[in-house]
Amino acid sequence: MSQINPEIFKAYDVRGLYGQDLDAAGAHQIGRAFARIIAQMEGKQPSALQLGLGRDMRLSAPEMAAAYRDGMVAEGAHVIDAGMVGTEMLYFLVGSRELDGGIMCTASHNPKAYTGAKLVGRGALALSGDSGIGDVRRLVAEGLGAEPGGGSSEQVDIYADFQANALRFIDPAAMRPLKIVVDGGNGMAGRMVGPLLAQLPLKLETAYWEPNGEFPDHEPNPLLPENREFIMHEVVAHGADLGIAWDGDSDRCFFIDDQGEFVDGDFLTAILAESLLGKTPRATILYDVRASRAVADTVERLGGTALVNRVGHAFFKARMRENGAIFGGEVSGHYYFHDFYNADSGTLPALLILEQLSQSKRKLSEIVGAFRSRYFISGEINSHVDDAPAKIEAIAAHYTDARQSRLDGISIDYEDWHFNVRASNTEPLLRLCLESLVSVQDMEAKRDEVLGLIRG
Image 1 (cartoon, rainbow, N blue to C red):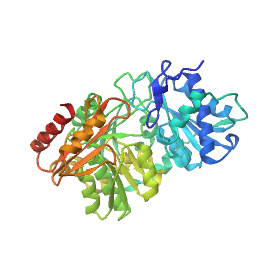
Image 2 (spheres, rainbow, N blue to C red):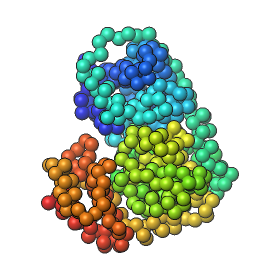
Image 3 (spheres, rainbow, N blue to C red):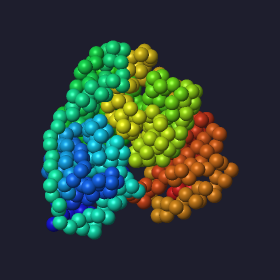
Image 4 (cartoon, rainbow, N blue to C red):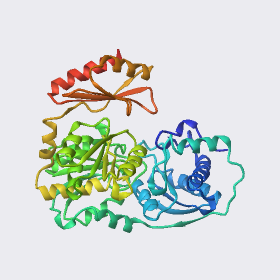
C-alpha cells in the first residue's frame, strides 16, 4: 500500500517527510502518473517517451529514485538515469538530449527527514501546481489501474558534458587567483561545482564539501542566517575575496562579500545582469516582484530591458521563453539563464561572479556597497494571518494614491519607496518585502507601518 499525503503536491514540486508523507510505493505511483501526464503533453504514447532521472545525496534518495524510475518504466517509458547529480544537471540532461521530461529526486534545502521530487517537461520546463503537478496528484488519487509495462532504463554519466558546458559561459583565461571560501552544506555542490573550480587559478578553502545526507554540520539552507554564520566567519578569518554557499541540491548559490556580509539576492541579480549585459547588450532581464529597484535601474542604465515577473521557477522559465530574456533572478537565490535551457543554476552564478571580480579588479564589497548605500531593503518578513485576502484588500484601500499591481499578491509603488505583499503557497502567511530610497530609518518606519496593517 503506497503512502501519499495529498499535501505533498506543492506549487512548484513534490515534498514531504520520508515514510510519513511519501514512501517508495507512493513514488512509484507518482512516476507512473508523471509518465502519463508527459505523454499527454507531448501527444505521444507512454512507450514512445524518453525521460530523465536524477537524485541527490539524501539517505532515502537511492530507494526513492529507483521507485520513480520503476514507475516510469511500468508505464512503458525509457528512462535515462544520471544517478547522483545536482538538480540543474537533471535539467541539463533533459535539455541537452531533448528528452520529453524528467524527475529529480530531491527535497532541496529541507532537513534530512524530507524527500521529494522536481518535475520537468520538454526543454526542462518546470511543471507546477497550475500546470502538471495538479494533474499528477489527480491521477494518483483516482488510481492508475494495471501497469502496461514494456519500458526500459539505462545509466549515464553526464558530469563531463555538464562541466564542459558550464565553462563555456566564462573566459577561464581571464580568471585571477582569487581566494574563496566555499560551503557545500554536505549537498551536491562539492561534486558538481568542485571540479570546475579546481580548473581555475583559485585559492580554495572548502567546507562541508562531501555529499552526506546526514547533514552533520548544518542544514543545507543558506537563506537561514544561522546556516551561513560559519562561512561569514571563515571569509573574514581567511582574508578571502568572497564566500559561496550552496543549498542541498545545489541549484541555488549564495554569496558572502570580502567583509563577511551576506549579499542579498536582488543585489546579486543586478550584479549578474551587469555581467550578462556586457556579453549580450540591450538584452531583456527578468526580476521578481519582491526585488529592489537596483535591478531595474541597473538594467536600464546599461541599455537593457527589465521586466518584473511573478515569483516561482515555473513562471520565470515560461516568461523567459515568451520574451527571449537572457537572464532572470529571484530574491530567493534562483538565477535562470537562457543559454541553459532557461533553467536555474547554482553553478553559473558562481562562475560569472568570479569572472566579474577578476575582470573588474574590484572587491565584491565595493560593488555591493554601491547598492547598499542607495537602496535600503527590509528583506522578506513573514506574518501569520487568518485571512490573507482580506489583509491584501485592506492594504489596497489604505494606499489608494500609489501605483498598484496585482501581478503577484499586491505591489504598492511610490517614487521613493515601494513594497510587495504575497500570500504563502503552503502556510497561513503573508510575506512582505519593502524598500526605501531615502534611508534605513525611512525603510524601518515604512516597514513598521505596513506590518501594522498586516498584523493589526
